[in-house]
Image (cartoon, rainbow, N blue to C red; front, side):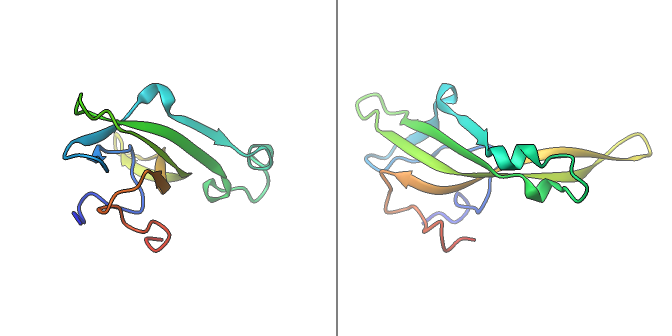
Length: 119
């Protein structure tokens, strides 16, 4: 397994090994969808609210870049948001970054880690 490919979270979903051939599957950007749970969005701005309270999920399709293969892979998981410091003009500014935490990949691959153990 190429450990550099598999992480607990990604700022964007990288190209991954195709489960069928030697190619790479890449996100079909038109298929990427994120959705926040109603209870999560309703609680935004509450007295004790933090970015860790956000509950979002994502789904997408990835397609193999080898034309004769064209494997389609379904990926799903959750999205976390974190407020992080960024360098500003002398002031400590913050920005919000989204991270994708994949939990399933169908079809899987022999090179795919057990995402449940990667927590």
